[in-house]
Length: 280
Image 1 (cartoon, one colour):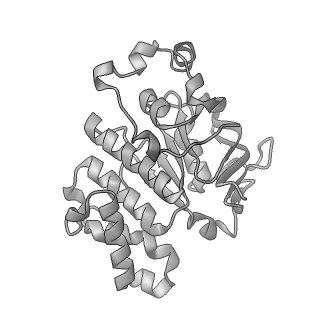
Image 2 (cartoon, rainbow, N blue to C red):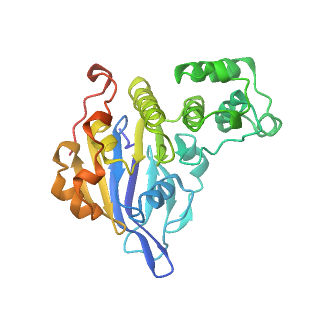
């Protein structure tokens, strides 16, 4: 079985700054992984490298190869000829929503089907009835079908994130990469978005990688946590091994500053709703 995502000695520099430094990792199918680290640690850059939105260095110490489900995304600073095929399996959720605000919620979700349509139908936006039903079902699944006819810009930030999640479902993504999806949301909306992401992953067997500043969400919702510092992976293992001393070293702040007070503590979906995973 091919890994959902595999990075082999990937690096990315911007001038004199090394944003990602010789990182290798593997994400298994259906696995849910939190990516943590201070601002500037390389989390967002790693997400963009994994999706092929930016190119890795061509003169690194390794191959700089990225594969999704065995299909090459990029290698040695060049996009693969198979990148379009690889991207069909990768859904993206960003902090800034990445929706077309003037278009309806339904249309934004149906955009997820473009990768499976021929060029003419895709260019003209000629969605058939099956694609419309699929989009509506995805909106219902994430709890916002009642807003299908609204313009995307009329929705709250949390609702817009759920539109992006519904779009990934319509796309048929087998891997979702979410870059700080709750960074700009209030606590109630943030929890709703995290619940939606984890439930989506659980119910559809979708691999999920989420970069987070909120350590409490990372340790509560995910079994595996990857921590980055100065572009390098400094921890990759069970969330249960994350302790106060490590967090203080990673962030340069006390654990009390990083974890929500108990009255605001987050809780994941019910235990029976979470897939059992092991971390090598």
